[in-house]
Amino acid sequence: MRKFLVVLDDSRECLNAMRFAAMRASHTGGGVAILAVIPPEEFNHWIGVGDIMRDEARERITAHFEVFAKWMRDRQGVDPELVIREGDPVTEILAQIKDDPEIGILVLGAGTDKKGPGPLVTQMSRTSGSLPIPITIVPGDISKEKLEAIT
Image (cartoon, rainbow, N blue to C red; front, side, top):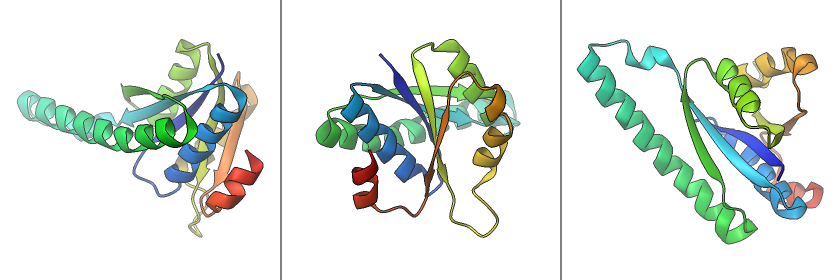
């Protein structure tokens, strides 16, 4: 089964990327893998404090994932999987693509800020020529109706 890989983070544009991935998976018989990356600098404390912070980050990610997962199951009939990795986001995205041969498309949400589409979209676009899969970049301000029409 082909999977759409979408990145879960705290950005607003993440929502449309999630919607797009779920709708496309539903319409094409695919799956959705949701990747959350915990940056290592969040845990540069004493070992005990770092472990507590890591556990709290995982709990936040799981709670955030469950909101998207419920919507995907209820509305799109797609049961997503959650993958949590620690490290640099670009490095971990590339590693996940390499580790899971079923991933066929990377879906990213583009920011609507005047500064550009966001650091992740910018960095992944630079490496897109050497990726083994295509990238779909979903505009952050696209409407739900438009998403439904194009998926």
